[in-house]
Structures are given as structure tokens and as C-alpha cells.
Image (cartoon, rainbow, N blue to C red; front, side, top):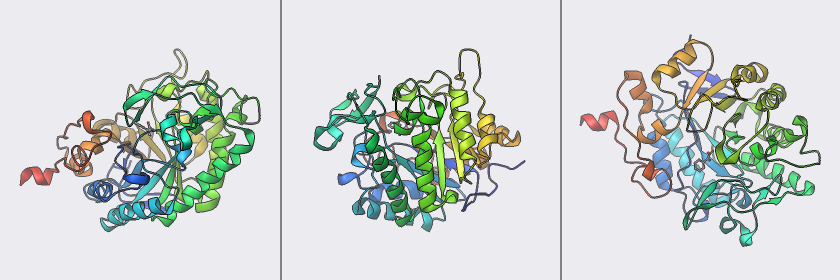
Length: 370
Ligand code: 8OZ
């Protein structure tokens, strides 16, 4: 069985190891949602194949102004943002790393202060999420959304496609579609959020339609071998709820099996929380069922440490392991895992917003030894 440190090819992308840096929202983009030199430094610190990740997935990146839900998250919908991302991809590639960007539309998890002209955020249905977002004033409840009209949906699919094309222009090795954590694509999937009566609501086939149209558009534009997807079948994040996630995600995975996607990435359990969230009362969720159906390289995520990661690869239950918070506080996480060395603790007070503190100033083993 492969070790965490063995190379692997995912679609068209050759990786030096099976260690993935999970997407991590850090709210440090510059004016105009443009990536900065500090962001390039942060990603470059984690890019060396010998000490960092085999694959970096960037923080979630909005495909449009409407898709923004938090202060100072980066965008990928204009030329300035492309130029900002170019400095990130150049810095990562100079270190020998690989990087994809996570394409994001938050849907209803937003606030009028982040929308053009103070508009309401958009959603499958006009149901406000019981969750908070982060704006200039701090954490506030999200705004009441408006229901998307049927004739607006092609625009959103087109914006995902355009962002994927811009990602390639910006030098990314590919994209990861954010289908997780209660954001727009996940909102359409779930019967607790999507109450539509048109072809995008009701049956599983209808609720999965938007996600699959986005997959079709992006793979058509940049190739399936440069397209990954992240799902979180049972997470309660952002008030996500569904009466029966197993058949829903089994159907999605069956449909994904028609594409040779670069990878499928799943958050197991509650995002950033307990791993053992059932599908329904007393019924565990069967992730391997999705894996068999989709047939793509499989990235497992949520709360992995070295022991669980290697045991998971040894059992054949995953091909790659994504680490989130450990990568925040350990730029050389790959080296530390290799050596079985202790990890720096993360400071959650500097996760969201700010500058270099708690971002680019975590020490490497090397620095500690000097
Ligand atoms: C933490 C804070 C804000 C956004 C996700 C993009 O959960 C996020 C996110 C995480 O997928």
C-alpha cells in the first residue's frame, strides 16, 4: 500500500506526495478581493514537495461579486484578481509545488453589505440560514436571501466556467469546485434548503442538476483532468440539512463517474468537528459507496493525524489525505509528518483576517533548530 509520501497522478496533475493542503479561508485578500504578495509567501511556504504539500488547494475564491459571503476573501472574476493570483501560482511553482484554486459561490451565506448595491444574497429558495458571516463590523447573522429565477441559472453556470478559464490563465494546475459546507451548490442539493418546484428542485435528479451543470461546464472548458470537486455529505455547516443524504450523494457520485475527474474530495462528518456524523439516526454514512461510483482519485479530509492518515491509505480507503488546520500552523507539515516530529499548535484567533501574524510567521523545524 502507498505511503503518504509516495507520488501520485491525479488526472493531468503529477503530485510528489499524497499530502494535500485543504482549502482554508483566511480573509487576507487586498482591495478589490485581489490576492497579495503576503498570500503568495504563505502558499509558497507550504509548496516545497520535500517539506510541504503534494497539492495545495487555495482558500475558497468567489466566482462573482454575488458569490462573496465574507470580508476580504479573494475573487477570480476580473483581470486584477488574475494578476494577483499569478504571483501566487508563480511562487508555488518556483518551489516545485502544485496548486489548484477552489471555486466558490456562497449563495445564501452572505450579507447585503457584501453584495452590489446592498442587494439580497441569492439562494435556491428564500430561506434564511441559521448561521453567521464575517463583515466589517465583525460576525453578524447572514441576510435573508432571494430565490434565484430559473432564467438566472445559466448566468451562474457561465460564471463558474469563466472563473475556471481564468484560473488556468492565472497559472493554476486546475480547480476544485466547492460543492461542500452549505454554500450555493450544496444548497441546491439539499431538500432542507432547496424548496424549488422547477427542474432545479424536488427530486434528487433535479437538486443535483446545478452541480452537474457546473461540472459539465468546467470540465468542458479546462478538462476533467484538471477539475476536482469537494463534497461534505453529512456536515451541518451553515445550516446544511437533508432528510436522506446517502441516496442523494450516491446519485451525484454515479453521475460524476461519467467524467474522469482529477479527484473527489470529501469532508467526513462535520466540517472541522466530529468525524462520526451519521447519515440518518443510527445509520453511518457510506463514503466508500461514493468512491466506488465516482471512480476518481479519492481525497479524505477532516481531523486526520499521521496515524489515521497512514492507516487510511494502508486500508485502501483513500488515495490522498487533506490536512487543514495543521497546515495553518506548520508550513513544513510534510517534513514533520515524515519525521514523526511534533506539530506547532494553531492559534484560532488569527485564522480570519489580519496580516502576517498567525499566517506566515509559524516556525519550521529548520528555523526552530537554528
Ligand atoms: C471558514 C470561514 C469562512 C468560510 C468553508 C469556505 O467552510 C469556508 C469557510 C470556512 O468551506
